[in-house]
Length: 611
Image 1 (cartoon, one colour):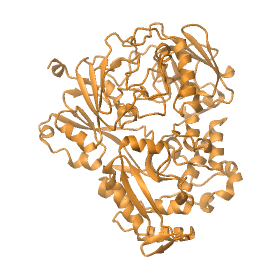
Image 2 (cartoon, rainbow, N blue to C red; image 1 turned 90 degrees about the vertical axis):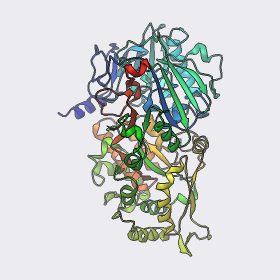
Image 3 (cartoon, rainbow, N blue to C red; image 1 turned 180 degrees about the vertical axis):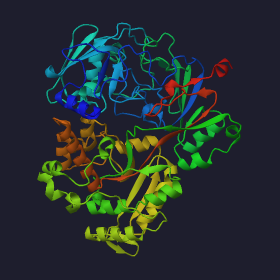
Image 4 (cartoon, one colour; image 1 turned 180 degrees about the horizontal axis):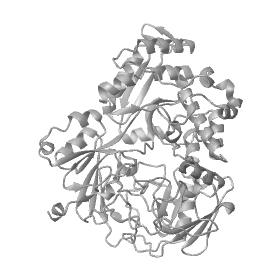
């Protein structure tokens, strides 16, 4: 039997490869057996003997106006591009690491290892999840971390936290403290099977600190943390300086060995990617993440590179956790008709974009669900049909008989075929072409704005706009400040934006936040398009309650198929590598793990430290 099949059988039976009968274990896994055994010394992708010291300078694209990342108010540093890849964050330590944003594993997925919690126990038949805290865990003020802090964190995030916390935490029936170091979560029988992992990611906030402060407000006062770094200096919107905590309580844990090697880390925030790249070339920034394929090919002919003082590295990225799309705002009357959305989608000339703008560095996104796409039936099988039978009248006619395919061109800029097909769709939807414009029955033009936070996106968007103009659609491109952009996203004040859709292998309540009708009008939810579709609602529920492997696959395949055929999003592209340039006094480990990188495992050379 294949390992994946064996895992899914165990998973759906409720064993999840966790401890049974409240047997304490140092890890929690929902995917095969853990890669690292109970007595592991460090992760395979770190250098346990990495030198400590030095000052790392990084560039983040964006800004910030709060240091509280746990509410929907304000813009936290972690909102900026690449900060999660850096790994130097304003986040509180969670109970366990390996699966969440704080410190994800770089060489395997879906296993959490103890950080604040030294052990975990799960009793599936009783829906009971327990954590045992380390007795030496401390906040930076030396206050012990206890189960009261865990309970406090649970309740304040449920009541006042970002809307994304509620769908997860409300699946817990009650929280019970046994003593200062053991806490129990009684899960509701209807809880998603991924909930144990989600609860292991719970950030632990200091009760004694927050009980005298208003958690709901933005703040630029460095919050009390417990991790390897403390925030030493803040220049609002411009920079943050982190200092390594010399007496950090968890520095010798296996999950931390070989990590957090720099004494100081400065995150400098830039509004313009070209400005940050210039700072890197000038030696003001130590590591640069290259977002532009063209610049990677042509932008590095400067002295430091030619002298061998800078290295360029293509780092494999097999995670693909999150795929980019152009998202329609379905709240707009312009985009209510599926035929209009399809016509607009057809006029994105991916083949030309790939060849001319991207130097063929990317592949086209063709699916929302990475782990399921390879074995997805070409057309719905009988199991999918059964799930979708109540919704036959609202699905496209070709849904059951044809495979979904994105429009393709020859890549030479000729879109005659796409233009002809798009005009037919638009005509069928009630639009007519007149003197270079598309007009509806009230003589109103089809005009909308593509909103972005980076002006450099115009090199991609403007050719798309030109193609739309050829059929009479006017799409304006507007680049605005990142803080304004994020605010407008939250308030759903946009026509079209670029977004990232991330669906994990085993779906949890995250799936409901992305696509379910109940999340469409919740400010700050991930359903930014405003999808209201009873077929999708039903498929989300089926995926979350799947009783076996077949049911899970069937629901996810069908969901993927409906999302594609409804044209709520225009698929973008994805890269095979993370492009990183670094000055040679900063060094990475000898080998890169399969799922990207975190700069927490890098270090400064001893010679540079002494200087």
